Image (cartoon, rainbow, N blue to C red; front, side):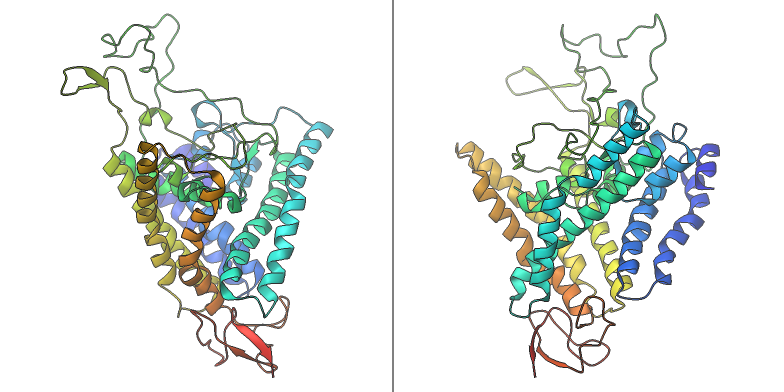
Length: 454
């Protein structure tokens, strides 16, 4: 029904109003599952956040679903809406389709399933051991939680991607990309951590704020045969300068995760941020899920005059203030959604506020990081990757120990094993609360504490 509504109504408030019932259904569906269960957490992430945000972005005419609405079949539309996957886009932001079929497509799907499988399994098992072992201190537990969640979600996302490729023939990009190799905060949030969520924030929050409008401007109409290709006002452009032409093409999409890019065009990547080298050593950069590229490109016709009287090109895209406001708004919405997910998944409201605080400090930290990189660049100092990785990691994990993972550790009821009922461990163990821990509704200690046998 949502697809039929979008095919018959233009982007804007009317389409958004008609899509609200479906968005409300996605938002309420996780409440049908048991509190503190894996099914409830998965449904909250996939439906309450991703599917709802994709649907609202579609109502605004943004995102790959909007750009490929008439191209996609009903099955392909539902797969991109409901599964935590990122489609690779081609010219005009349209979704790229896999040209192969039969056994060739199944082999492509197998590539997605096996992509970085040993690495993700090792990280997941190591994280489970560290999170369940009572002698591991809280700070290493935060690293185990961060990297374990990423590795486990990578396994899950790769399985979803394999299914979508095999059944629907879509070309997909990685959803998680080795956050333990982050070289900066922008690299972490924009290219490595939970890229489907970052893409949803980009289309629904970052892009509208930078553009100052809910519905994007329509892309330029392709010129008809014999029509003058020069845009209006470009007559004064210097000879040989073709920067005034609209950007409508991109590199050919990759055919498997191993060939796919390690970077996605996400909210934090578009914000003012330092450009750090990719620690993976992958030189291929594919812009994923991007629409409205023409609104960000500069034109040679717009020029500013400096004090010496020479003309210098000026970008015709969003200002630095607009991008900064969009960055702050993006992290604010992300913090709000994490507060909702924390309450929905754990049923505990005592830790609300910590997630908002954690995400509120990310924009100032990114700006400070940018100034530091600029200062070192002017001084002729190039920071090595082996130094950037631990500095960026500590910058994130130290506040996350209290504001992000600490909130979950304090909100989740302890249990003897991951499959036990919540609270089953309370009668058999006495525990000493760790940093940021509190009491749960059962009157006992909370998960994330260092326990010892009586």
